[in-house]
Image 1 (spheres, one colour):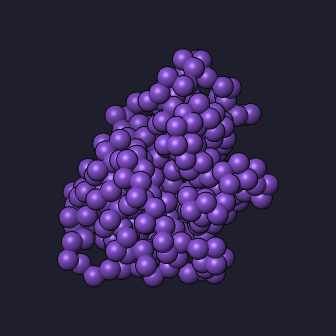
Image 2: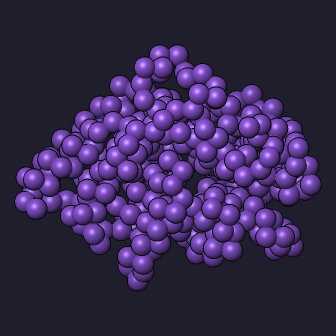
Length: 328
């Protein structure tokens, strides 16, 4: 394929709206909550595990997000032989919740650069977003093989924190998302192995430590390894310097008995993302402490929220889809 032909295919992939991995538009359920205002004439981005349509309705400054996408596309057109430019187009689409377009861009990039790990890392992330966990695991395992023995590189932020400090590296993100994908599949042993790898890259910033600790703690509790889970919390304390992951920090403090579950749920200053994160963690706390009915109540509150790409939202959806707690 010539560069010009490849670039045309990649740009076409980035502008194909709402198609699934098989090229078919998802069919919305007729038994779920109404679509958001103004969405009834649009195709959903995907159908949730509970049967409801989910639309690309991101929060934040839409004009700014669209402008950033246009800039990324221009960069890709100017530098068609740079795989990182394709990565950024896909990432910018993801920030707009246009996940299937993002996957299409990453897939077209992989055809041209089959050994470029970031393409698999980011496509794996977006496979999680659209609830294709098997595909996510395959991509992230491929990325893990490709980065083996390579220098640890900082991953630039597309949506920087207030301090404008990028906190994560490529290996951290590969293993972190692989752990999540396995966790969502119910492969808790596999998730634990991935999070043990993630922990190797989690010590530089306390944001990363609380994020990895949160998911690893929940994984150990699901495996019935309560003493190991408790020991994992030893470095966690209230005076940690947290720039991004305040919800994970509050949850890990809850696991230590320093926060109360209901107080976290009642926090007034939490945004949609933090509410989803906190809700799943608190619901999970109730679940593995035997309060399964309360867990399901909290998870239903999570999936009634708007931030469907949030990992806590996806995990709550998985739990409800697996159980009889969700009314069918």
